[in-house]
Length: 219
Ligand code: CA
Image 1 (cartoon, rainbow, N blue to C red):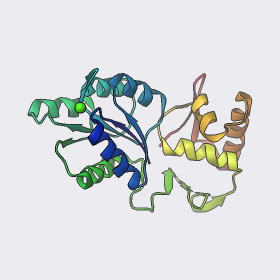
Image 2: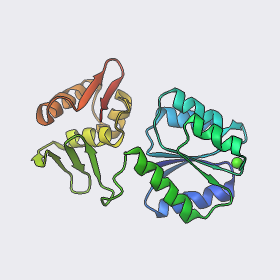
Image 3: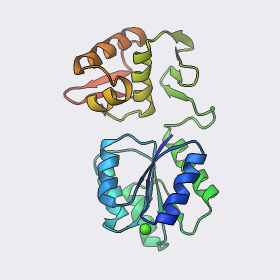
């Protein structure tokens, strides 16, 4: 999965980055809260690892902003602050869980998997390559889509579009995000054509148009 790591400590950040990568994740490592706000607002992530003590502000503000924007990305807070108030504040603000420094990396990875699993975005019981929405199951490793158990034939581009949307259920993906991820070489018009063709194959009720913004797969 794609993880945003927000940690200003270079030694800790580097060790977390490599541990996450070794566990098969794609990692974007950020050191300042201003960059965290920008990245997580603009880019889809499967999870956010958030340090609270950042050089240009408090990670709690990042948390507050993301939840105010309606971002549902699972957030695991990593912090040295172990007071009850900080924990309660963070959970009130929408953090999914806490890990206190110092921690064991294996525990942090397990807690991260747990918050992502709880968020329903990731099927941990599978081999990590299947995405589900209603009766659609998309197997990214085998590049197969089934609806109610029956295979649905998609073009490569349609598959890439649906894959991108299903990885981020209930999150509106902008036209720019979808074009960048699923059809990097086409013009703006082609996106709507591909979505039209995709809907013809999978049926209505899966991909919703958000006028002037983009598309969303709703669970
Ligand atoms: Ca820090």
